[in-house]
Length: 116
Length: 119
Image (cartoon, rainbow over all chains, first blue to last red; front, side, top):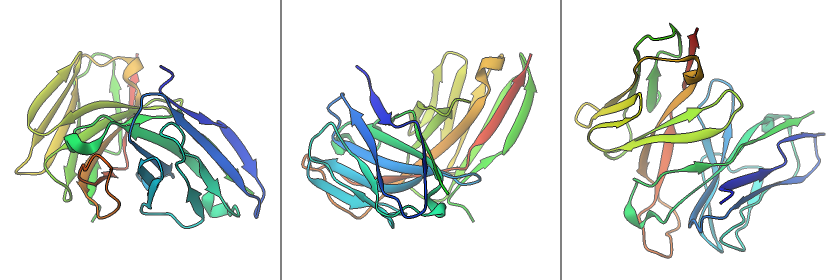
């Protein structure tokens, strides 16, 4: 299994540009999420999905869109990039939460995004 | 007050020393995650625990549910243990429900503890 994969690893954008961060998992996980990590702060949830076609907002959703057309893929779209979106982005997945909170989170390698 | 607080923020040790990282949380239900973030940035899950103690190699995690406190210990530390260690507390989250009917939760993360082990 490849686990959770993310592309690209690095990206530089200009203010106002749009782009999509890709995330895929091959573990048939129901739950997928996007986090951003900023210096001096803990990981913060942007959007999450509990299955194909079902997504919801996290703590910091503004400026981002997501969709989940398949179980495997959960792309994150930046609509109009702003310098405040400079961050490291992590995608994560876990098994069905029917078992409660004891499901291990699997993280992708991260995407380092700089918006000029 | 942060909902999940870790101490210390930075920790430098000599190889072989016993390491303790603490996590106190004010949110969440009775469980806690410990994660490790490598210098290259990748994050891996170390432990999920809801009571008592768990051990994996030289890593030991303990939790006191009543006091909402957890500790991560590293015995016989080694330079390869150098990383950021993150604790995360799950709490119920109002939102969409999974088709399998599982309860929703979100993770609140601490800011991390940067551990450097010198040879």
